[in-house]
Length: 193
Image 1 (cartoon, rainbow, N blue to C red):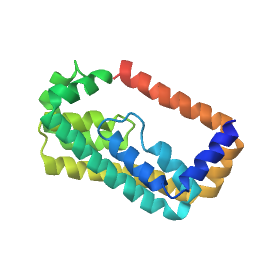
Image 2: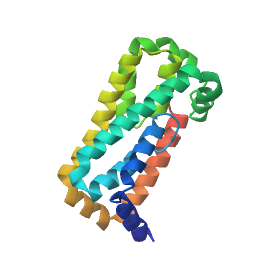
Image 3: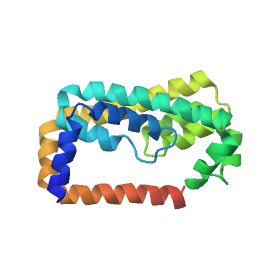
């Protein structure tokens, strides 16, 4: 069953609608969606290495555009929309103390969150809610998200066939590691941070 799921995913990743899915997930992840675009970017690059740089560019642009939506939600709809989202991720109580120092370190905060697994939507909402300088937000987001997605695409591009063979030979192990990391990341964010 796992092999069929993998084969289906690889087929979809090389299909004509895959870039639309990548753009949509990347856009939504920066404002409201909990799953990172890497889960689509990685199989797409593995399935079609020639388009690695295009996929990284698409992911970066749509992520920054989604970040602007998150910024707007934080700025215009903080009470109605952003507070429940922050509450879902366990950051509602910490937000007030966070906001006090946010603008002082805002460019660095956006950059660090943009390249790490930290939920970027929390930062985009906080940037809007604290009125972080918009050009600084856009520039930091563009550099951070670009770095993250181009590094992932670059590693997969240069290590392509061996990585694909490694994954295919150890499919059950890779799937288990992915699930543990995904669930563990959410648990860590919820209880540690």
